[in-house]
Length: 63
View: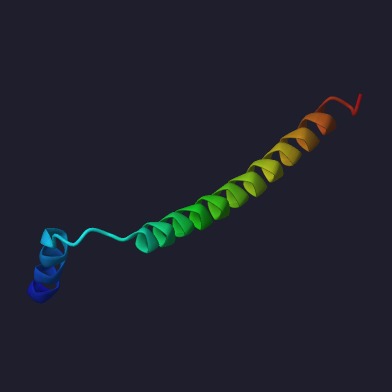
């Protein structure tokens, strides 16, 4: 565990800045994660709205 922490500290202290390619890869990963999260949240919200709508419709007699 100590060796892993030493590697992390050395990585953070390293003066070599990230290149444009590394920034592009990080941006692409962030975009993919955001799209996946939006998709999941959208499906869950749609399901919830449908359930609530059906529940309201059945309690009001469908008028």
